Length: 498
Image (cartoon, rainbow, N blue to C red; front, side, top):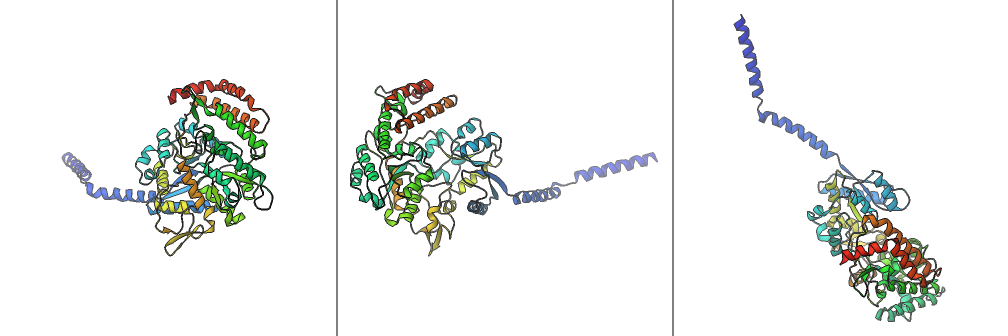
């Protein structure tokens, strides 16, 4: 009996072993594969959500929501199921509000910076874009020379735009009515510019009285410096003295001469008496309302917008004329800084969807993406008539949110150029007078001192121009600047630049 029980136990164990060893892989594998396929299908069915924050772009703006919906549709054609989630920014200065949001730990996947990015990069919060660009199809071929140089120095911001010098513009009918305009074009010297701006301020060109001012700017000297800096000898941020040493341009003797000239323009009412409080919108409105003869606008699309609005307000004869920079010691609009992009798009180093974010940036550099980004909405900003793209009156209300390479091809032929004649000419002049800046990246530990020194200059220059203090106090300002940290910065600049 015991032998029978033992035999039965052996038989049962043998059957169990056979059962275990007979589970053939080719029978079990398909089950796992089916389960895996179901999981993958469910995963693919769920879109990858990427959060995006951009200045002046709100999830409550129907046009922008539609724009990103179209981007999602374009990506879907490439097999990418992506949902773009726009981040609402609170009212206030964008750079400040963005910094508060990021420092609070709320870091979107794609971030548009217009300042404040270096602090994030120093903390390792921004992704190095170099490997993504190297493997790209469209972006790497669309980079300008200055883009490449900036990325090699600072690989965290991407901003594919042509050189965007700020250029002076005037309505054509007024320019043609001046006695000094032709002399200005032949020889745009500082003296000829002064005579030209003075005539604009003094003469009545349309029977409605002379404009209040010859020229205005939006609160800062940066715009008017585009016209006059190089002519006075401020050919770069750091310039060399007679000994070959680098000094900061704003504490040089030629800066003193320039500020004295600006003070003259201001005292004679040629420079807008309210330039310090002017904003971009009030500056532009004064131009369209013929309260000022010349304003400075960014070459390319911005000039195109100015041109459209001016003609809409004052007629076709008021098409804009783009003026050259003043000629003197040097000639050119402001030299181009290649230390880094001053603005642009960054990918969060903490993002779980970096590849998907860059895929969107790459799509926007493709012909299909460029058609959307450059032209806007079909039947709103453009129409396709007989196989050709024709822009509508609303075309000038659209601007490229992302990239603007010089060469772009669409599936349909353009009936007219993307930009009008004045804006195209503005880009040509920007390239003609392109010069590379000589500048340094301020060490992080010196940034607070540097900010204080820049504020010192802003206050002093404003007081000199508006007549509150004499230009004779320039040497005192220079001493204050060096004492506030300028000595250390200058020593560092000479070490780097030499």
